[in-house]
Image 1 (cartoon, rainbow, N blue to C red):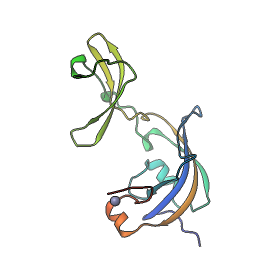
Image 2 (image 1 turned 60 degrees about the vertical axis):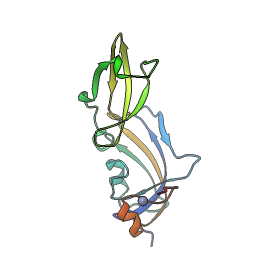
Image 3 (image 1 turned 120 degrees about the vertical axis):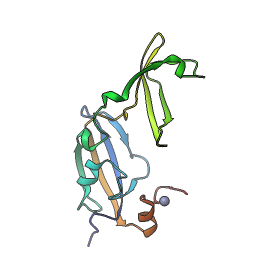
Image 4 (image 1 turned 90 degrees about the vertical axis):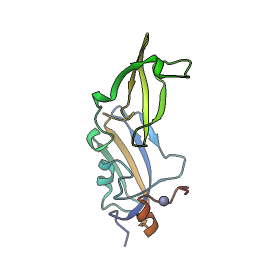
Length: 162
Ligand SMILES: [Zn+2]
């Protein structure tokens, strides 16, 4: 009997992610399928929920609202800072993206949205915050996670190295 996706499953799947206008934002097409450990918060919660009970060979389309995707746009994440904060950066202009380290050590994505004189508007929201996610999913494989994967909270498929 085919293994059904649930807690402790390692799932490999091909996916295509589109916004509401049908624009492709991300895709595994032409590459390796994406593998994740189910139940560990490795993927957005709305997609994880929709995959419960599915098995290898299944195809599905899943619509995920921002609340169960990358969150709503947080107005507090939009800030105006001084140009001088960009020490060592020669040109600061709208559209530039940076990775910075947040106080808790996680990577923080920063996008410059506006430059006006000495004032720079930055947006700390996830690039997909506020976006309704439309996934096309093809499940390639479902297996039980190893104890090591469960201990680590992620799968070791897909070239994950320690
Ligand atoms: Zn690991």
